[in-house]
Image (cartoon, rainbow, N blue to C red; front, side):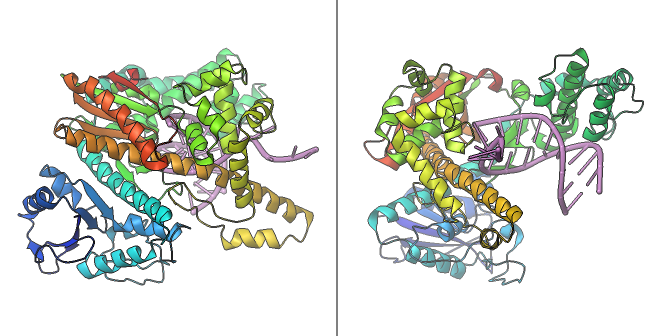
Length: 549
DNA sequence: TTCATCACG
DNA sequence: ACGTACGTGATGAAT
């Protein structure tokens, strides 16, 4: 017997909990009205007795008080996230309206059919929740395989939402004093927000002098480009990767300035003030907005933490990070979704790129990596290049799969992930541009747009499935940690697409490492069945994030 | 508001 | 002969 608990706003109080049997929809308990004070304990007791799937519109609002009280929820159905998935999924049995995730965060009115938004915004009332849930159940496909996949996707997305809340609550252990010391060393004394720190200002002055351009602002690409031209450097832009081609002391100086300037603006004192509290970094993870199902983060650029700053991501004494990432995840995902036996064979060993090297398909690891990326991204060095040709010959099934995805996209069709996350359809403007090609120029533009969309859909099938593998991996890891009784001391504290960071007591690290690898194995089986290809993970144990590579 | 640049997977 | 990859967020300058 499985139960579902609707968690709604009580118009006369705080929360309303409606606990029902999942199959029969019979109430297992009379409707529970619960006050703010009793909320956490009531939820905890229902969790302990029934372990229901908690159906809520959004996690925000409900999860923070539960987490503050140390309450763990095993399962969830986040209606807003499920609604978007089902709206876009080609597997859905019927079309259902979108949910405006981008704007709904602050909206609480019922059925606010504001002309601004296409999608109705739902309130948090029990009626709204049940209506949404029913609508979603009815739109699930009849076909049992498709149905199972879409349900799995919604459950995985929902547990991901719980994990995101848990990570936001826990925060990432940050050596604030160490970070400040690093800033003092590299930038000099702290100055007001808009002034240049002393060491940076000095470098700017030196550059102005060297380039014979008084008052030069090296942060202005225009000014810097002009000054470089004047000094005789024929560069097209001032991008670091372009300047790096030139070996010249002056260029080195510029690159050094850029690095320091970046540190000051992106991870300087202001950033620390804003995002690190009590030596923990608390970013906000955003689910459901990236089309491929990857997560985004707002606040502090959590998903773009520079490697250079990771040295100050440190645990306290007695504790350590356990950092795990899916090895060569995207090629393995491609092997799975295309059912390419040769590529799965290549991935049977932990290092897929080494296999390509041993098979003499490529001559360096870098070539192996770039070749694979090229195939998945649809790059010019892909099927047309030498490496691409070798890969096409060795893995024809996988190559056909991505080619088909690209062709579909070029024709304006949609594609989907393995579990059924659909990509948004080509918009009306795109379709019009394809039809109305009056002259050569518009034809060229239309062709370029078609190719761009082809690259997007080619990548989508892989990236979106990789994202759901990662969700399922995290979900299994969380479940296993809970089962082991470690939830209190062992926490997931960071996540970036195919990498998870846990923080735990030193003595648990080895066991946790094995648990994470097992979770990866389970994730493969959950998605692709008993014959799932191999999904190895690399795990590093370190009290310092920078060393865990 | 848009552009250029840089950070990440 | 071409298109020189996919997906994001944040910042400061330019408009």
